[in-house]
Image 1 (cartoon, rainbow, N blue to C red):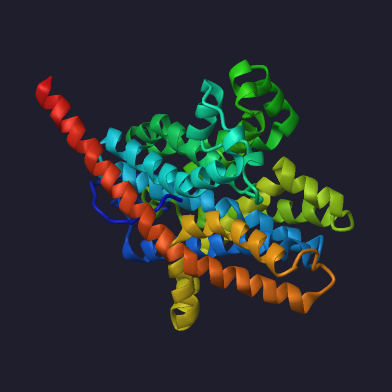
Image 2: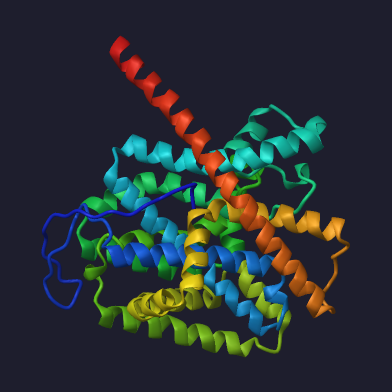
Length: 393
Protein backbone atom coordinates (compact mmCIF):
# COMPACT_ATOMS: atom_id res chain seq x y z
CA UNK A 1 0.00 0.00 0.00
CA UNK A 2 2.46 2.62 -1.14
CA UNK A 3 1.55 6.05 -2.40
CA UNK A 4 0.72 4.79 -5.86
CA UNK A 5 0.70 1.64 -7.97
CA UNK A 6 -0.73 0.65 -11.35
CA UNK A 7 -1.06 -2.50 -13.39
CA UNK A 8 -0.08 -3.30 -16.97
CA UNK A 9 0.35 -6.33 -19.18
CA UNK A 10 2.94 -8.16 -21.30
CA UNK A 11 3.90 -11.76 -21.97
CA UNK A 12 5.92 -14.74 -22.95
CA UNK A 13 4.55 -18.16 -23.71
CA UNK A 14 4.84 -21.26 -21.60
CA UNK A 15 2.87 -24.46 -21.04
CA UNK A 16 1.66 -25.33 -17.56
CA UNK A 17 -0.17 -28.26 -16.01
CA UNK A 18 -1.32 -26.37 -12.92
CA UNK A 19 -4.52 -25.29 -14.63
CA UNK A 20 -6.98 -27.71 -16.17
CA UNK A 21 -5.47 -27.45 -19.63
CA UNK A 22 -2.33 -26.05 -21.25
CA UNK A 23 -2.63 -22.29 -21.61
CA UNK A 24 -0.55 -19.49 -22.96
CA UNK A 25 0.80 -17.47 -20.07
CA UNK A 26 2.92 -14.37 -19.70
CA UNK A 27 6.02 -14.93 -17.70
CA UNK A 28 6.67 -11.27 -17.53
CA UNK A 29 2.95 -10.99 -17.06
CA UNK A 30 1.00 -8.03 -16.05
CA UNK A 31 -2.70 -7.69 -15.48
CA UNK A 32 -5.60 -7.78 -17.84
CA UNK A 33 -7.83 -4.74 -17.43
CA UNK A 34 -10.49 -6.68 -15.49
CA UNK A 35 -7.87 -7.96 -13.05
CA UNK A 36 -6.49 -4.44 -12.67
CA UNK A 37 -9.96 -3.01 -12.03
CA UNK A 38 -10.76 -5.73 -9.52
CA UNK A 39 -7.52 -5.33 -7.59
CA UNK A 40 -8.09 -1.58 -7.37
CA UNK A 41 -11.63 -2.08 -6.07
CA UNK A 42 -10.49 -4.71 -3.57
CA UNK A 43 -7.81 -2.42 -2.20
CA UNK A 44 -10.23 0.50 -1.91
CA UNK A 45 -12.82 -1.66 -0.18
CA UNK A 46 -10.23 -3.15 2.17
CA UNK A 47 -9.00 0.27 3.30
CA UNK A 48 -12.57 1.40 3.98
CA UNK A 49 -13.09 -1.82 5.95
CA UNK A 50 -10.04 -1.01 8.09
CA UNK A 51 -11.38 2.48 8.79
CA UNK A 52 -14.82 1.15 9.74
CA UNK A 53 -13.21 -1.45 12.00
CA UNK A 54 -11.30 1.23 13.90
CA UNK A 55 -14.44 3.35 14.11
CA UNK A 56 -16.36 0.67 15.98
CA UNK A 57 -17.62 -1.86 13.42
CA UNK A 58 -16.00 -4.77 15.28
CA UNK A 59 -17.80 -3.72 18.49
CA UNK A 60 -21.23 -3.43 16.87
CA UNK A 61 -22.41 -7.04 17.23
CA UNK A 62 -19.81 -9.16 19.01
CA UNK A 63 -18.76 -11.85 18.54
CA UNK A 64 -20.24 -11.99 14.99
CA UNK A 65 -18.70 -8.66 14.01
CA UNK A 66 -15.23 -10.07 14.65
CA UNK A 67 -15.57 -12.06 11.43
CA UNK A 68 -14.74 -8.90 9.46
CA UNK A 69 -11.15 -9.16 10.70
CA UNK A 70 -10.72 -12.13 8.35
CA UNK A 71 -10.85 -9.54 5.55
CA UNK A 72 -7.60 -7.82 6.58
CA UNK A 73 -5.35 -10.31 4.71
CA UNK A 74 -6.99 -9.10 1.49
CA UNK A 75 -4.78 -6.00 1.79
CA UNK A 76 -1.66 -8.17 1.96
CA UNK A 77 -2.89 -10.27 -0.97
CA UNK A 78 -3.46 -7.13 -3.04
CA UNK A 79 -0.11 -5.63 -1.98
CA UNK A 80 1.72 -8.79 -3.05
CA UNK A 81 0.03 -8.71 -6.45
CA UNK A 82 0.88 -5.04 -6.97
CA UNK A 83 4.47 -5.46 -5.78
CA UNK A 84 5.15 -8.39 -8.11
CA UNK A 85 3.78 -6.52 -11.11
CA UNK A 86 6.04 -3.57 -10.26
CA UNK A 87 8.97 -5.95 -9.87
CA UNK A 88 8.33 -7.30 -13.39
CA UNK A 89 8.26 -3.82 -14.92
CA UNK A 90 11.49 -2.44 -13.46
CA UNK A 91 15.13 -3.27 -12.80
CA UNK A 92 15.50 -4.98 -9.43
CA UNK A 93 17.16 -2.03 -7.66
CA UNK A 94 14.59 0.43 -8.99
CA UNK A 95 11.73 -1.81 -7.87
CA UNK A 96 13.10 -2.10 -4.34
CA UNK A 97 13.87 1.62 -4.09
CA UNK A 98 10.41 2.67 -5.30
CA UNK A 99 8.56 0.29 -2.99
CA UNK A 100 10.53 1.37 0.08
CA UNK A 101 10.46 5.10 -0.67
CA UNK A 102 6.74 4.81 -1.41
CA UNK A 103 6.22 3.51 2.13
CA UNK A 104 8.67 5.90 3.80
CA UNK A 105 7.62 9.31 2.52
CA UNK A 106 3.89 9.39 3.48
CA UNK A 107 4.72 7.80 6.83
CA UNK A 108 7.43 10.34 7.66
CA UNK A 109 5.31 13.21 6.33
CA UNK A 110 2.79 12.53 9.10
CA UNK A 111 4.85 11.12 11.96
CA UNK A 112 8.05 13.19 12.02
CA UNK A 113 6.35 16.63 12.35
CA UNK A 114 4.00 15.25 15.02
CA UNK A 115 6.85 13.67 16.98
CA UNK A 116 8.90 16.88 16.78
CA UNK A 117 5.99 18.99 18.01
CA UNK A 118 4.76 16.76 20.84
CA UNK A 119 7.74 14.62 21.86
CA UNK A 120 10.93 16.40 20.80
CA UNK A 121 12.61 15.76 24.15
CA UNK A 122 11.88 12.04 23.91
CA UNK A 123 13.44 11.62 20.47
CA UNK A 124 16.77 9.84 20.27
CA UNK A 125 19.40 9.48 17.57
CA UNK A 126 20.87 6.21 18.82
CA UNK A 127 21.20 3.37 16.27
CA UNK A 128 18.24 1.39 17.66
CA UNK A 129 15.87 4.37 17.52
CA UNK A 130 16.98 5.37 14.02
CA UNK A 131 16.63 1.79 12.78
CA UNK A 132 13.15 1.62 14.29
CA UNK A 133 12.16 4.72 12.34
CA UNK A 134 13.60 3.32 9.11
CA UNK A 135 11.61 0.14 9.70
CA UNK A 136 8.49 2.29 10.22
CA UNK A 137 8.20 1.03 13.78
CA UNK A 138 8.87 4.02 16.09
CA UNK A 139 7.76 3.98 19.71
CA UNK A 140 4.05 4.80 19.66
CA UNK A 141 4.23 6.83 22.88
CA UNK A 142 5.86 9.60 20.81
CA UNK A 143 2.46 10.46 19.35
CA UNK A 144 -0.48 12.11 21.13
CA UNK A 145 -3.03 10.04 19.20
CA UNK A 146 -3.43 6.27 18.76
CA UNK A 147 -1.42 5.03 15.80
CA UNK A 148 -1.53 1.30 16.38
CA UNK A 149 -2.24 0.59 12.70
CA UNK A 150 1.42 1.22 11.87
CA UNK A 151 2.03 -2.45 12.69
CA UNK A 152 0.62 -3.15 9.21
CA UNK A 153 3.00 -0.71 7.51
CA UNK A 154 6.01 -2.19 9.33
CA UNK A 155 5.01 -5.71 8.30
CA UNK A 156 4.45 -4.55 4.72
CA UNK A 157 7.96 -3.07 4.64
CA UNK A 158 9.41 -6.32 6.01
CA UNK A 159 7.56 -8.25 3.30
CA UNK A 160 8.91 -5.93 0.60
CA UNK A 161 12.42 -6.71 1.90
CA UNK A 162 11.58 -10.45 1.83
CA UNK A 163 10.32 -10.07 -1.74
CA UNK A 164 13.87 -9.27 -2.80
CA UNK A 165 14.57 -12.97 -2.22
CA UNK A 166 11.22 -14.51 -3.15
CA UNK A 167 10.23 -12.63 -6.32
CA UNK A 168 13.27 -13.72 -8.37
CA UNK A 169 12.44 -17.31 -7.40
CA UNK A 170 8.79 -16.83 -8.38
CA UNK A 171 9.77 -15.30 -11.70
CA UNK A 172 12.18 -18.09 -12.69
CA UNK A 173 10.91 -21.22 -10.94
CA UNK A 174 8.50 -23.80 -12.31
CA UNK A 175 4.92 -23.00 -11.35
CA UNK A 176 4.35 -26.39 -9.72
CA UNK A 177 7.40 -26.09 -7.50
CA UNK A 178 6.56 -22.63 -6.25
CA UNK A 179 2.93 -23.64 -5.65
CA UNK A 180 4.07 -26.67 -3.64
CA UNK A 181 6.41 -24.49 -1.58
CA UNK A 182 3.65 -21.97 -0.92
CA UNK A 183 1.22 -24.68 0.19
CA UNK A 184 3.90 -26.11 2.47
CA UNK A 185 4.44 -22.69 4.01
CA UNK A 186 0.68 -22.25 4.57
CA UNK A 187 0.61 -25.61 6.36
CA UNK A 188 3.53 -24.50 8.53
CA UNK A 189 1.65 -21.36 9.62
CA UNK A 190 -1.29 -23.54 10.63
CA UNK A 191 0.72 -25.75 12.99
CA UNK A 192 3.09 -23.22 14.58
CA UNK A 193 1.54 -21.08 17.31
CA UNK A 194 2.28 -17.47 18.15
CA UNK A 195 4.28 -18.28 21.31
CA UNK A 196 6.71 -20.50 19.39
CA UNK A 197 7.41 -17.91 16.69
CA UNK A 198 7.70 -14.95 19.07
CA UNK A 199 10.02 -16.91 21.38
CA UNK A 200 12.26 -17.82 18.45
CA UNK A 201 12.78 -14.18 17.44
CA UNK A 202 13.04 -12.97 21.04
CA UNK A 203 16.13 -15.12 21.39
CA UNK A 204 17.88 -12.81 18.89
CA UNK A 205 18.99 -9.63 20.73
CA UNK A 206 18.66 -7.40 17.66
CA UNK A 207 14.99 -8.32 17.16
CA UNK A 208 14.26 -7.87 20.85
CA UNK A 209 15.99 -4.47 20.97
CA UNK A 210 13.92 -3.29 18.01
CA UNK A 211 10.68 -4.58 19.60
CA UNK A 212 10.19 -6.86 16.59
CA UNK A 213 9.44 -10.41 17.87
CA UNK A 214 5.67 -9.83 17.71
CA UNK A 215 6.03 -8.11 14.34
CA UNK A 216 8.05 -11.02 12.99
CA UNK A 217 5.17 -13.30 13.95
CA UNK A 218 2.81 -11.03 12.00
CA UNK A 219 5.22 -11.06 9.05
CA UNK A 220 5.44 -14.85 9.19
CA UNK A 221 1.64 -15.17 9.10
CA UNK A 222 0.85 -12.55 6.47
CA UNK A 223 3.68 -13.57 4.12
CA UNK A 224 1.48 -16.39 2.82
CA UNK A 225 -1.18 -13.92 1.65
CA UNK A 226 1.36 -11.48 0.21
CA UNK A 227 3.12 -14.12 -1.88
CA UNK A 228 -0.15 -15.88 -2.73
CA UNK A 229 -1.27 -12.60 -4.31
CA UNK A 230 2.00 -12.35 -6.24
CA UNK A 231 1.73 -15.98 -7.38
CA UNK A 232 -1.93 -15.81 -8.39
CA UNK A 233 -1.52 -12.64 -10.42
CA UNK A 234 1.66 -13.86 -12.09
CA UNK A 235 -1.07 -15.03 -14.40
CA UNK A 236 -4.57 -15.81 -13.10
CA UNK A 237 -5.00 -18.45 -15.83
CA UNK A 238 -2.38 -20.59 -14.10
CA UNK A 239 -4.84 -21.41 -11.31
CA UNK A 240 -7.93 -23.25 -12.51
CA UNK A 241 -11.33 -22.38 -11.12
CA UNK A 242 -11.79 -25.97 -9.96
CA UNK A 243 -8.61 -25.75 -7.88
CA UNK A 244 -9.68 -22.37 -6.51
CA UNK A 245 -13.14 -23.69 -5.61
CA UNK A 246 -11.66 -26.73 -3.87
CA UNK A 247 -9.18 -24.54 -1.97
CA UNK A 248 -12.04 -22.22 -0.96
CA UNK A 249 -14.08 -25.09 0.47
CA UNK A 250 -11.12 -26.73 2.20
CA UNK A 251 -10.29 -23.48 4.01
CA UNK A 252 -13.60 -21.68 4.47
CA UNK A 253 -15.63 -24.59 5.86
CA UNK A 254 -13.13 -25.58 8.60
CA UNK A 255 -12.61 -21.89 9.37
CA UNK A 256 -16.34 -21.33 9.82
CA UNK A 257 -16.67 -24.51 11.90
CA UNK A 258 -13.90 -23.41 14.27
CA UNK A 259 -15.42 -19.93 14.47
CA UNK A 260 -18.88 -21.21 15.39
CA UNK A 261 -17.35 -23.23 18.21
CA UNK A 262 -16.29 -19.91 19.76
CA UNK A 263 -19.42 -17.87 19.06
CA UNK A 264 -20.41 -17.73 22.73
CA UNK A 265 -16.95 -16.66 23.84
CA UNK A 266 -15.98 -13.10 22.93
CA UNK A 267 -12.54 -13.55 24.52
CA UNK A 268 -11.91 -16.58 22.31
CA UNK A 269 -12.97 -14.62 19.21
CA UNK A 270 -10.57 -11.81 20.12
CA UNK A 271 -7.79 -14.35 20.72
CA UNK A 272 -8.32 -15.73 17.20
CA UNK A 273 -7.58 -12.23 15.89
CA UNK A 274 -4.57 -11.39 18.04
CA UNK A 275 -2.91 -14.81 17.72
CA UNK A 276 -3.60 -15.16 13.96
CA UNK A 277 -4.27 -18.83 14.61
CA UNK A 278 -5.47 -21.58 12.28
CA UNK A 279 -9.07 -20.37 12.56
CA UNK A 280 -8.08 -16.89 11.33
CA UNK A 281 -5.82 -18.18 8.55
CA UNK A 282 -8.38 -20.64 7.17
CA UNK A 283 -11.16 -18.04 7.16
CA UNK A 284 -8.93 -15.52 5.40
CA UNK A 285 -7.94 -17.95 2.65
CA UNK A 286 -11.55 -18.99 2.19
CA UNK A 287 -12.71 -15.39 1.86
CA UNK A 288 -9.94 -14.48 -0.60
CA UNK A 289 -10.65 -17.56 -2.74
CA UNK A 290 -14.38 -16.75 -2.74
CA UNK A 291 -13.60 -13.19 -3.87
CA UNK A 292 -11.41 -14.46 -6.71
CA UNK A 293 -14.13 -16.84 -7.83
CA UNK A 294 -16.70 -14.03 -7.69
CA UNK A 295 -14.64 -11.49 -9.66
CA UNK A 296 -16.89 -11.17 -12.72
CA UNK A 297 -20.13 -11.08 -10.72
CA UNK A 298 -18.81 -8.48 -8.26
CA UNK A 299 -17.34 -6.33 -11.02
CA UNK A 300 -20.67 -6.38 -12.84
CA UNK A 301 -22.53 -5.44 -9.66
CA UNK A 302 -20.15 -2.62 -8.67
CA UNK A 303 -20.13 -1.19 -12.19
CA UNK A 304 -23.90 -0.77 -11.90
CA UNK A 305 -23.63 1.16 -8.63
CA UNK A 306 -21.75 4.24 -9.79
CA UNK A 307 -21.42 6.04 -6.40
CA UNK A 308 -20.04 2.88 -4.78
CA UNK A 309 -17.52 2.39 -7.57
CA UNK A 310 -16.42 6.02 -7.32
CA UNK A 311 -15.96 5.67 -3.54
CA UNK A 312 -13.90 2.47 -3.87
CA UNK A 313 -11.68 3.95 -6.59
CA UNK A 314 -11.13 7.10 -4.53
CA UNK A 315 -10.14 4.94 -1.55
CA UNK A 316 -7.78 2.97 -3.79
CA UNK A 317 -6.05 6.08 -5.13
CA UNK A 318 -5.64 7.52 -1.64
CA UNK A 319 -5.32 4.26 0.29
CA UNK A 320 -2.15 5.05 2.21
CA UNK A 321 -3.36 8.50 3.25
CA UNK A 322 -6.71 7.13 4.44
CA UNK A 323 -4.95 4.37 6.34
CA UNK A 324 -2.64 6.80 8.14
CA UNK A 325 -4.95 9.73 8.77
CA UNK A 326 -8.19 8.23 10.04
CA UNK A 327 -6.98 7.56 13.61
CA UNK A 328 -5.59 11.08 14.25
CA UNK A 329 -8.79 12.51 12.76
CA UNK A 330 -10.82 10.27 15.09
CA UNK A 331 -8.72 11.42 18.04
CA UNK A 332 -9.25 15.12 17.28
CA UNK A 333 -13.01 14.72 16.74
CA UNK A 334 -13.45 12.72 19.94
CA UNK A 335 -11.54 15.26 22.03
CA UNK A 336 -12.85 18.45 20.45
CA UNK A 337 -16.52 17.39 20.20
CA UNK A 338 -16.67 15.26 23.36
CA UNK A 339 -17.51 12.12 21.37
CA UNK A 340 -15.61 9.53 23.38
CA UNK A 341 -17.24 6.39 24.82
CA UNK A 342 -20.29 6.30 22.54
CA UNK A 343 -20.85 2.53 22.70
CA UNK A 344 -24.36 3.01 24.15
CA UNK A 345 -25.32 5.90 21.87
CA UNK A 346 -25.80 4.59 18.33
CA UNK A 347 -26.97 7.88 16.69
CA UNK A 348 -23.98 9.82 18.00
CA UNK A 349 -21.63 6.95 17.12
CA UNK A 350 -22.91 7.06 13.53
CA UNK A 351 -22.46 10.85 13.41
CA UNK A 352 -18.88 10.44 14.65
CA UNK A 353 -18.25 7.74 12.05
CA UNK A 354 -19.51 9.93 9.20
CA UNK A 355 -17.52 12.94 10.41
CA UNK A 356 -14.29 10.93 10.59
CA UNK A 357 -14.78 9.38 7.15
CA UNK A 358 -15.67 12.69 5.45
CA UNK A 359 -12.85 14.69 7.05
CA UNK A 360 -10.31 11.93 6.44
CA UNK A 361 -11.30 11.73 2.78
CA UNK A 362 -10.99 15.51 2.42
CA UNK A 363 -7.52 15.47 3.97
CA UNK A 364 -6.36 12.37 2.11
CA UNK A 365 -6.34 13.97 -1.34
CA UNK A 366 -3.86 16.83 -0.59
CA UNK A 367 -1.84 14.44 1.60
CA UNK A 368 -1.52 11.97 -1.30
CA UNK A 369 -0.60 14.74 -3.75
CA UNK A 370 2.04 16.16 -1.42
CA UNK A 371 3.46 12.69 -0.70
CA UNK A 372 3.81 11.91 -4.40
CA UNK A 373 5.34 15.31 -5.11
CA UNK A 374 8.00 14.80 -2.43
CA UNK A 375 8.62 11.22 -3.54
CA UNK A 376 9.02 12.28 -7.18
CA UNK A 377 11.49 15.05 -6.37
CA UNK A 378 13.55 12.85 -4.05
CA UNK A 379 13.62 10.13 -6.71
CA UNK A 380 14.80 12.59 -9.37
CA UNK A 381 17.64 13.76 -7.12
CA UNK A 382 18.53 10.16 -6.28
CA UNK A 383 18.65 8.90 -9.86
CA UNK A 384 20.57 11.94 -11.08
CA UNK A 385 23.12 11.33 -8.31
CA UNK A 386 23.38 7.65 -9.25
CA UNK A 387 23.97 8.51 -12.94
CA UNK A 388 26.64 11.03 -12.06
CA UNK A 389 28.33 8.53 -9.76
CA UNK A 390 28.39 5.94 -12.53
CA UNK A 391 29.86 8.44 -14.97
CA UNK A 392 32.58 9.40 -12.50
CA UNK A 393 33.29 5.72 -11.88
